[in-house]
Length: 422
Picture 1 (tube, rainbow, N blue to C red):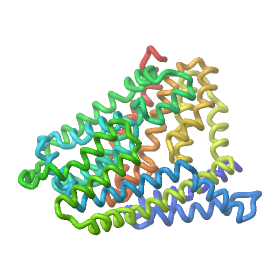
Picture 2 (cartoon, rainbow, N blue to C red):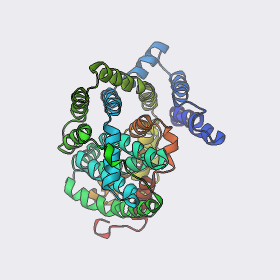
Picture 3 (cartoon, rainbow, N blue to C red):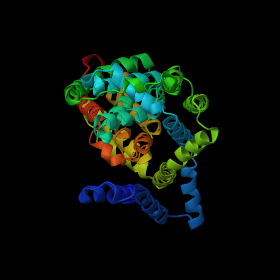
Picture 4 (cartoon, one colour):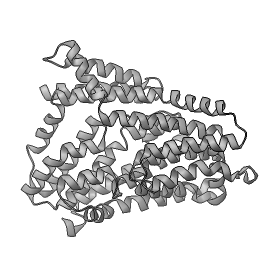
Protein backbone atom coordinates (compact mmCIF):
# COMPACT_ATOMS: atom_id res chain seq x y z
CA UNK A 1 0.00 0.00 0.00
CA UNK A 2 2.85 2.38 0.75
CA UNK A 3 4.21 1.99 -2.78
CA UNK A 4 0.83 2.62 -4.38
CA UNK A 5 0.28 5.61 -2.13
CA UNK A 6 3.64 7.02 -3.22
CA UNK A 7 2.56 6.69 -6.87
CA UNK A 8 -0.94 8.06 -6.29
CA UNK A 9 -0.07 11.72 -7.19
CA UNK A 10 0.64 10.51 -10.71
CA UNK A 11 -2.73 8.76 -10.82
CA UNK A 12 -4.42 11.93 -9.54
CA UNK A 13 -2.81 13.95 -12.34
CA UNK A 14 -3.72 11.42 -15.03
CA UNK A 15 -7.33 11.27 -13.83
CA UNK A 16 -7.71 15.03 -13.62
CA UNK A 17 -6.08 15.82 -16.95
CA UNK A 18 -6.21 12.79 -19.23
CA UNK A 19 -9.41 11.06 -18.10
CA UNK A 20 -11.44 14.26 -17.71
CA UNK A 21 -10.31 15.51 -21.14
CA UNK A 22 -11.26 12.20 -22.78
CA UNK A 23 -14.65 12.05 -21.03
CA UNK A 24 -15.48 15.61 -22.06
CA UNK A 25 -13.92 15.10 -25.50
CA UNK A 26 -12.24 18.47 -25.04
CA UNK A 27 -8.53 18.79 -24.28
CA UNK A 28 -8.91 22.43 -23.24
CA UNK A 29 -11.56 22.12 -20.51
CA UNK A 30 -9.10 20.96 -17.85
CA UNK A 31 -5.98 23.19 -17.81
CA UNK A 32 -2.84 21.12 -17.38
CA UNK A 33 -1.49 23.68 -14.91
CA UNK A 34 -4.48 23.16 -12.60
CA UNK A 35 -4.15 19.37 -12.87
CA UNK A 36 -0.48 19.58 -11.88
CA UNK A 37 -1.21 22.05 -9.07
CA UNK A 38 -3.85 19.73 -7.58
CA UNK A 39 -1.67 16.62 -7.87
CA UNK A 40 1.33 18.52 -6.43
CA UNK A 41 -0.68 19.67 -3.40
CA UNK A 42 -1.90 16.11 -2.95
CA UNK A 43 1.70 14.81 -3.13
CA UNK A 44 2.73 17.25 -0.39
CA UNK A 45 -0.24 16.18 1.78
CA UNK A 46 0.51 12.43 1.62
CA UNK A 47 4.25 12.80 2.36
CA UNK A 48 4.79 11.46 5.87
CA UNK A 49 7.51 12.04 8.46
CA UNK A 50 8.17 15.67 7.58
CA UNK A 51 6.77 18.96 8.73
CA UNK A 52 4.83 20.95 6.16
CA UNK A 53 7.76 23.31 5.64
CA UNK A 54 10.10 20.35 5.06
CA UNK A 55 7.65 18.78 2.59
CA UNK A 56 7.55 21.98 0.59
CA UNK A 57 11.37 22.11 0.69
CA UNK A 58 11.53 18.55 -0.68
CA UNK A 59 9.07 19.53 -3.41
CA UNK A 60 11.21 22.60 -4.19
CA UNK A 61 14.29 20.40 -4.36
CA UNK A 62 12.73 18.53 -7.27
CA UNK A 63 11.58 21.73 -8.96
CA UNK A 64 15.08 23.19 -8.67
CA UNK A 65 16.83 20.09 -10.00
CA UNK A 66 19.68 21.14 -12.32
CA UNK A 67 18.08 19.29 -15.27
CA UNK A 68 14.79 21.11 -14.68
CA UNK A 69 16.46 24.51 -14.48
CA UNK A 70 18.51 23.80 -17.61
CA UNK A 71 15.28 22.94 -19.41
CA UNK A 72 13.73 26.23 -18.26
CA UNK A 73 16.62 28.19 -19.78
CA UNK A 74 16.04 26.34 -23.05
CA UNK A 75 12.31 27.12 -22.91
CA UNK A 76 13.00 30.83 -22.34
CA UNK A 77 15.51 31.05 -25.19
CA UNK A 78 13.30 28.98 -27.50
CA UNK A 79 10.35 31.27 -26.88
CA UNK A 80 12.45 34.36 -27.54
CA UNK A 81 13.88 32.88 -30.76
CA UNK A 82 10.54 31.59 -32.10
CA UNK A 83 8.74 34.89 -31.62
CA UNK A 84 11.60 37.10 -32.87
CA UNK A 85 12.00 34.86 -35.93
CA UNK A 86 8.27 35.17 -36.59
CA UNK A 87 8.37 38.97 -36.19
CA UNK A 88 11.11 39.43 -38.77
CA UNK A 89 9.50 37.02 -41.26
CA UNK A 90 11.87 34.06 -40.95
CA UNK A 91 9.11 31.49 -40.49
CA UNK A 92 7.04 32.64 -43.49
CA UNK A 93 10.13 32.76 -45.70
CA UNK A 94 11.24 29.28 -44.61
CA UNK A 95 7.75 27.87 -45.14
CA UNK A 96 7.57 29.23 -48.68
CA UNK A 97 11.03 27.91 -49.47
CA UNK A 98 10.07 24.46 -48.18
CA UNK A 99 6.91 24.46 -50.28
CA UNK A 100 8.97 25.52 -53.28
CA UNK A 101 11.62 22.81 -52.87
CA UNK A 102 9.41 19.85 -51.91
CA UNK A 103 6.68 18.51 -54.21
CA UNK A 104 3.23 18.64 -52.61
CA UNK A 105 2.99 14.87 -52.20
CA UNK A 106 6.36 14.66 -50.41
CA UNK A 107 5.76 17.47 -47.93
CA UNK A 108 4.82 15.24 -44.98
CA UNK A 109 7.55 12.72 -45.73
CA UNK A 110 10.06 15.54 -46.19
CA UNK A 111 9.29 17.06 -42.78
CA UNK A 112 9.64 13.61 -41.16
CA UNK A 113 12.99 12.96 -42.88
CA UNK A 114 14.23 16.42 -41.91
CA UNK A 115 13.29 15.76 -38.27
CA UNK A 116 15.06 12.39 -38.33
CA UNK A 117 18.19 13.87 -39.91
CA UNK A 118 18.43 16.88 -37.61
CA UNK A 119 17.77 14.85 -34.46
CA UNK A 120 20.30 12.15 -35.25
CA UNK A 121 22.82 14.90 -36.06
CA UNK A 122 22.26 16.98 -32.92
CA UNK A 123 21.42 14.09 -30.57
CA UNK A 124 18.56 15.94 -28.90
CA UNK A 125 14.83 15.80 -29.50
CA UNK A 126 14.31 19.18 -27.80
CA UNK A 127 16.70 20.96 -30.16
CA UNK A 128 15.00 19.41 -33.18
CA UNK A 129 11.54 20.40 -31.95
CA UNK A 130 12.67 23.97 -31.29
CA UNK A 131 14.17 24.29 -34.77
CA UNK A 132 11.45 22.64 -36.86
CA UNK A 133 8.10 23.05 -35.07
CA UNK A 134 7.56 26.71 -36.08
CA UNK A 135 8.25 25.80 -39.71
CA UNK A 136 5.94 22.77 -39.52
CA UNK A 137 3.15 24.90 -38.01
CA UNK A 138 3.59 27.50 -40.75
CA UNK A 139 3.39 24.77 -43.40
CA UNK A 140 0.23 23.39 -41.80
CA UNK A 141 -1.43 26.80 -41.89
CA UNK A 142 -0.45 27.32 -45.54
CA UNK A 143 -1.62 23.89 -46.71
CA UNK A 144 -4.68 23.32 -44.51
CA UNK A 145 -3.10 20.34 -42.74
CA UNK A 146 -4.07 19.85 -39.10
CA UNK A 147 -1.52 21.67 -36.92
CA UNK A 148 -1.44 18.90 -34.30
CA UNK A 149 -0.78 16.29 -37.01
CA UNK A 150 2.09 18.28 -38.51
CA UNK A 151 3.57 18.93 -35.06
CA UNK A 152 3.39 15.19 -34.31
CA UNK A 153 5.49 14.48 -37.41
CA UNK A 154 8.29 16.64 -36.00
CA UNK A 155 8.00 15.12 -32.52
CA UNK A 156 8.11 11.58 -33.90
CA UNK A 157 11.13 12.25 -36.10
CA UNK A 158 12.92 13.98 -33.24
CA UNK A 159 12.77 10.81 -31.13
CA UNK A 160 14.16 8.72 -33.99
CA UNK A 161 17.45 10.60 -33.67
CA UNK A 162 17.27 10.92 -29.89
CA UNK A 163 17.12 7.12 -29.76
CA UNK A 164 19.93 6.41 -32.24
CA UNK A 165 22.35 9.35 -32.16
CA UNK A 166 25.87 8.72 -30.87
CA UNK A 167 25.84 12.04 -29.04
CA UNK A 168 22.40 11.61 -27.45
CA UNK A 169 22.43 11.63 -23.65
CA UNK A 170 20.11 8.61 -23.67
CA UNK A 171 22.57 6.63 -25.79
CA UNK A 172 25.43 7.60 -23.51
CA UNK A 173 23.44 6.68 -20.37
CA UNK A 174 22.23 3.34 -21.79
CA UNK A 175 25.66 2.21 -22.97
CA UNK A 176 27.43 3.31 -19.80
CA UNK A 177 25.00 1.53 -17.48
CA UNK A 178 25.38 -1.69 -19.54
CA UNK A 179 29.11 -1.30 -20.19
CA UNK A 180 28.95 -1.66 -23.98
CA UNK A 181 30.13 0.30 -26.99
CA UNK A 182 27.87 2.91 -28.58
CA UNK A 183 28.48 1.57 -32.09
CA UNK A 184 27.35 -1.91 -31.01
CA UNK A 185 24.22 -0.53 -29.38
CA UNK A 186 23.55 1.46 -32.58
CA UNK A 187 23.66 -1.71 -34.69
CA UNK A 188 21.11 -3.49 -32.53
CA UNK A 189 18.94 -0.41 -32.06
CA UNK A 190 18.79 0.44 -35.75
CA UNK A 191 17.58 -3.07 -36.65
CA UNK A 192 14.68 -2.63 -34.22
CA UNK A 193 13.55 0.92 -35.08
CA UNK A 194 14.42 1.30 -38.80
CA UNK A 195 11.42 -0.84 -39.85
CA UNK A 196 9.19 1.50 -37.85
CA UNK A 197 10.71 4.57 -39.53
CA UNK A 198 10.27 3.08 -43.02
CA UNK A 199 6.65 2.10 -42.33
CA UNK A 200 5.83 5.58 -41.04
CA UNK A 201 7.65 7.20 -43.96
CA UNK A 202 5.44 5.16 -46.31
CA UNK A 203 2.33 6.31 -44.44
CA UNK A 204 3.37 9.95 -44.82
CA UNK A 205 4.02 9.46 -48.54
CA UNK A 206 0.52 8.03 -49.02
CA UNK A 207 -1.13 10.70 -46.85
CA UNK A 208 0.84 13.39 -48.69
CA UNK A 209 -0.85 12.52 -51.99
CA UNK A 210 -3.84 14.63 -50.97
CA UNK A 211 -1.77 17.68 -50.00
CA UNK A 212 -1.91 20.60 -52.41
CA UNK A 213 -0.21 23.96 -51.89
CA UNK A 214 0.81 26.85 -54.10
CA UNK A 215 3.96 28.53 -52.75
CA UNK A 216 4.24 32.28 -52.93
CA UNK A 217 7.60 32.16 -54.66
CA UNK A 218 7.81 35.91 -55.07
CA UNK A 219 7.59 36.28 -51.27
CA UNK A 220 10.73 34.28 -50.58
CA UNK A 221 13.42 36.53 -49.15
CA UNK A 222 16.60 34.53 -48.71
CA UNK A 223 18.08 36.80 -46.06
CA UNK A 224 15.13 36.06 -43.77
CA UNK A 225 15.94 32.34 -43.87
CA UNK A 226 19.43 33.02 -42.50
CA UNK A 227 18.48 32.66 -38.77
CA UNK A 228 17.10 29.16 -39.37
CA UNK A 229 20.14 28.17 -41.42
CA UNK A 230 22.37 29.34 -38.56
CA UNK A 231 20.31 27.40 -36.00
CA UNK A 232 20.30 24.20 -38.05
CA UNK A 233 23.98 24.42 -39.01
CA UNK A 234 25.22 25.06 -35.47
CA UNK A 235 22.91 22.39 -34.05
CA UNK A 236 24.16 19.80 -36.54
CA UNK A 237 27.73 20.84 -35.72
CA UNK A 238 27.06 19.78 -32.12
CA UNK A 239 27.02 23.24 -30.54
CA UNK A 240 25.27 23.46 -27.16
CA UNK A 241 21.54 24.04 -27.65
CA UNK A 242 21.55 27.25 -25.57
CA UNK A 243 24.38 28.70 -27.65
CA UNK A 244 22.47 27.68 -30.77
CA UNK A 245 19.38 29.55 -29.60
CA UNK A 246 21.37 32.62 -28.56
CA UNK A 247 22.99 32.76 -32.01
CA UNK A 248 19.52 32.38 -33.55
CA UNK A 249 18.13 35.24 -31.46
CA UNK A 250 21.09 37.50 -32.31
CA UNK A 251 20.78 36.69 -36.02
CA UNK A 252 17.05 37.55 -36.05
CA UNK A 253 17.92 40.93 -34.52
CA UNK A 254 20.68 41.68 -37.02
CA UNK A 255 18.59 40.62 -40.02
CA UNK A 256 15.57 42.50 -38.66
CA UNK A 257 17.55 45.74 -38.23
CA UNK A 258 18.99 45.29 -41.73
CA UNK A 259 15.44 44.99 -43.09
CA UNK A 260 14.35 48.14 -41.26
CA UNK A 261 12.66 46.57 -38.23
CA UNK A 262 13.03 48.62 -35.05
CA UNK A 263 15.30 47.29 -32.31
CA UNK A 264 12.46 47.84 -29.86
CA UNK A 265 10.09 45.79 -32.02
CA UNK A 266 12.69 43.01 -31.94
CA UNK A 267 13.12 43.07 -28.15
CA UNK A 268 9.34 43.37 -27.79
CA UNK A 269 8.91 40.20 -29.84
CA UNK A 270 11.50 38.46 -27.66
CA UNK A 271 9.59 39.53 -24.56
CA UNK A 272 6.32 38.18 -25.98
CA UNK A 273 8.02 34.89 -26.76
CA UNK A 274 9.40 34.56 -23.23
CA UNK A 275 6.05 35.45 -21.67
CA UNK A 276 4.38 32.90 -23.94
CA UNK A 277 6.52 30.19 -22.32
CA UNK A 278 5.19 31.08 -18.85
CA UNK A 279 2.67 28.25 -18.63
CA UNK A 280 5.24 25.76 -19.88
CA UNK A 281 7.73 26.88 -17.22
CA UNK A 282 5.10 26.58 -14.45
CA UNK A 283 4.14 23.08 -15.61
CA UNK A 284 7.78 21.99 -15.65
CA UNK A 285 8.40 23.26 -12.12
CA UNK A 286 5.25 21.61 -10.75
CA UNK A 287 6.04 18.33 -12.52
CA UNK A 288 9.61 18.32 -11.21
CA UNK A 289 8.46 18.88 -7.63
CA UNK A 290 5.68 16.28 -7.76
CA UNK A 291 7.90 13.61 -9.27
CA UNK A 292 10.57 14.27 -6.64
CA UNK A 293 8.01 13.57 -3.90
CA UNK A 294 7.04 10.34 -5.68
CA UNK A 295 10.70 9.32 -5.62
CA UNK A 296 11.18 10.45 -2.00
CA UNK A 297 8.15 8.44 -0.85
CA UNK A 298 9.51 5.28 -2.48
CA UNK A 299 7.33 5.11 -5.58
CA UNK A 300 10.14 4.28 -8.01
CA UNK A 301 11.75 1.73 -5.65
CA UNK A 302 8.35 0.06 -5.29
CA UNK A 303 8.01 -0.27 -9.08
CA UNK A 304 11.49 -1.75 -9.40
CA UNK A 305 10.83 -4.39 -6.72
CA UNK A 306 7.42 -5.23 -8.16
CA UNK A 307 8.67 -5.79 -11.70
CA UNK A 308 11.76 -7.81 -10.83
CA UNK A 309 10.09 -10.14 -8.32
CA UNK A 310 8.71 -12.74 -10.74
CA UNK A 311 10.87 -12.86 -13.84
CA UNK A 312 11.04 -16.14 -15.76
CA UNK A 313 13.07 -16.70 -18.93
CA UNK A 314 14.74 -14.31 -21.35
CA UNK A 315 11.54 -12.86 -22.80
CA UNK A 316 10.20 -12.19 -19.33
CA UNK A 317 13.51 -10.61 -18.34
CA UNK A 318 13.46 -8.31 -21.37
CA UNK A 319 9.82 -7.36 -20.83
CA UNK A 320 10.60 -6.57 -17.19
CA UNK A 321 13.45 -4.29 -18.30
CA UNK A 322 11.16 -2.59 -20.82
CA UNK A 323 8.45 -2.11 -18.20
CA UNK A 324 10.99 -0.96 -15.61
CA UNK A 325 12.42 1.87 -17.70
CA UNK A 326 8.95 2.78 -19.07
CA UNK A 327 7.40 3.23 -15.63
CA UNK A 328 10.51 5.01 -14.34
CA UNK A 329 10.14 7.41 -17.28
CA UNK A 330 6.44 7.81 -16.56
CA UNK A 331 7.32 8.84 -13.01
CA UNK A 332 10.29 11.09 -13.81
CA UNK A 333 9.24 12.54 -17.22
CA UNK A 334 12.91 12.39 -18.23
CA UNK A 335 14.20 9.54 -20.39
CA UNK A 336 17.84 10.00 -19.39
CA UNK A 337 17.04 9.91 -15.67
CA UNK A 338 14.80 6.88 -16.27
CA UNK A 339 17.68 5.02 -17.92
CA UNK A 340 20.08 5.96 -15.15
CA UNK A 341 17.50 4.79 -12.57
CA UNK A 342 16.65 1.50 -14.26
CA UNK A 343 20.06 0.80 -15.83
CA UNK A 344 21.83 -0.84 -12.85
CA UNK A 345 18.83 -3.10 -12.13
CA UNK A 346 18.59 -3.97 -15.84
CA UNK A 347 22.26 -4.92 -15.83
CA UNK A 348 21.67 -7.27 -12.90
CA UNK A 349 18.72 -8.87 -14.73
CA UNK A 350 20.83 -9.19 -17.88
CA UNK A 351 23.61 -10.99 -16.00
CA UNK A 352 21.18 -13.36 -14.27
CA UNK A 353 19.39 -14.34 -17.48
CA UNK A 354 22.42 -14.09 -19.83
CA UNK A 355 21.02 -11.28 -21.98
CA UNK A 356 23.22 -9.49 -24.54
CA UNK A 357 24.24 -6.18 -22.96
CA UNK A 358 24.05 -4.43 -26.34
CA UNK A 359 20.45 -5.53 -26.68
CA UNK A 360 19.63 -4.45 -23.13
CA UNK A 361 21.08 -0.98 -23.79
CA UNK A 362 18.97 -0.77 -26.94
CA UNK A 363 15.78 -1.77 -25.09
CA UNK A 364 16.45 0.76 -22.32
CA UNK A 365 16.89 3.58 -24.83
CA UNK A 366 14.01 2.57 -27.09
CA UNK A 367 11.34 2.17 -24.41
CA UNK A 368 12.42 5.31 -22.56
CA UNK A 369 12.13 7.30 -25.80
CA UNK A 370 8.76 5.66 -26.48
CA UNK A 371 7.28 6.80 -23.16
CA UNK A 372 8.97 10.21 -23.25
CA UNK A 373 7.55 10.75 -26.72
CA UNK A 374 3.91 10.16 -25.78
CA UNK A 375 3.43 11.48 -22.24
CA UNK A 376 1.69 14.89 -22.42
CA UNK A 377 3.77 16.27 -19.53
CA UNK A 378 7.18 15.43 -21.02
CA UNK A 379 9.46 18.35 -21.91
CA UNK A 380 9.36 17.56 -25.63
CA UNK A 381 5.58 17.40 -25.87
CA UNK A 382 5.17 20.53 -23.77
CA UNK A 383 7.72 22.36 -25.92
CA UNK A 384 6.07 21.29 -29.18
CA UNK A 385 2.59 22.15 -27.89
CA UNK A 386 3.79 25.51 -26.61
CA UNK A 387 5.39 26.47 -29.92
CA UNK A 388 2.33 25.31 -31.85
CA UNK A 389 -0.16 26.88 -29.38
CA UNK A 390 -2.12 23.63 -29.02
CA UNK A 391 -2.86 21.10 -26.26
CA UNK A 392 -0.21 18.38 -25.70
CA UNK A 393 -2.97 15.75 -25.71
CA UNK A 394 -4.06 16.77 -29.22
CA UNK A 395 -0.65 15.65 -30.52
CA UNK A 396 -0.67 12.18 -28.95
CA UNK A 397 -3.10 10.55 -31.38
CA UNK A 398 -0.95 11.46 -34.39
CA UNK A 399 2.39 10.18 -33.06
CA UNK A 400 2.69 7.47 -35.69
CA UNK A 401 6.42 6.90 -35.30
CA UNK A 402 6.39 6.61 -31.51
CA UNK A 403 3.64 3.99 -31.46
CA UNK A 404 5.09 2.10 -34.43
CA UNK A 405 8.51 2.10 -32.74
CA UNK A 406 6.91 0.66 -29.61
CA UNK A 407 5.18 -2.11 -31.57
CA UNK A 408 8.44 -3.01 -33.34
CA UNK A 409 10.30 -3.11 -30.00
CA UNK A 410 7.67 -5.40 -28.45
CA UNK A 411 7.75 -7.70 -31.49
CA UNK A 412 11.55 -7.77 -31.27
CA UNK A 413 11.25 -9.15 -27.73
CA UNK A 414 8.53 -11.67 -28.61
CA UNK A 415 10.29 -13.03 -31.71
CA UNK A 416 13.83 -12.63 -30.29
CA UNK A 417 14.86 -10.28 -33.11
CA UNK A 418 17.57 -9.61 -34.17
CA UNK A 419 18.64 -13.24 -33.66
CA UNK A 420 22.35 -12.43 -33.56
CA UNK A 421 21.91 -10.44 -30.33
CA UNK A 422 19.31 -12.73 -28.73
